[in-house]
Image (tube, rainbow, N blue to C red; front, side):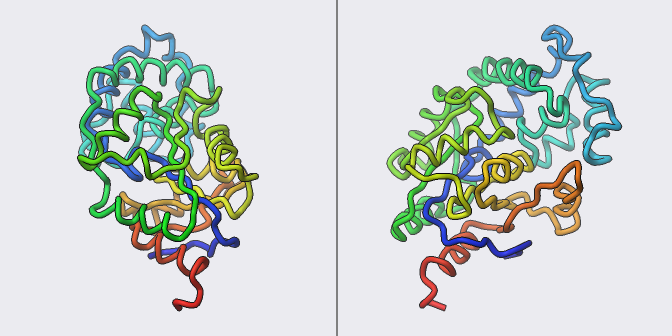
Length: 270
């Protein structure tokens, strides 16, 4: 486990991102993006694409340039299976909320043709969630996807379904804005009867997750399922005036997360 800094409060509840944190739905996501990106002009989004100089990293600028020219993802991006549609839309449109809303709506329409298969991102993940619930923690899950998709995936995952494991489920169509807005996270903890604080932990796999968590005023934990090295993590979370948000901790697996939680919840075990 690698940690940037130790979380400063004992968790009362943990809310998880869904895609690429708990669940692997990469294939359907990339198929849907393959449908959306060739339609950027039709959707009126070409003129709303960011300028290269406004990108956070050189790599983001290269991806933006490729999509502008080819209207598709670079094959290496899909092969790596590390970048979500939310992060891609952030790279393409930045803070243009209206453009992202149009893109997300087009994605949802395309995703209907592909969603269905869903697997846990790690083995024994159901057991990990049950262990956390056994520590008297409230658990929640959220996603930028619409409830239609999320309810199906929650019921199908692992061949057993995980709907009963969570005390709240927040979807992209439950709030006016999607991540990186803090609205979905704020709603999740409101559903759990908790005021946003450092005792509210949010776990996600993307830069947008961490931005949303920090903007919500909760403890933001980066799940490094993609196994980025420390140099890359420092690059995507530079801690600059323009991009100030950095995770409170980085965990490479859910076993690392449970060990971190137990440091706070069960200190006598140490």
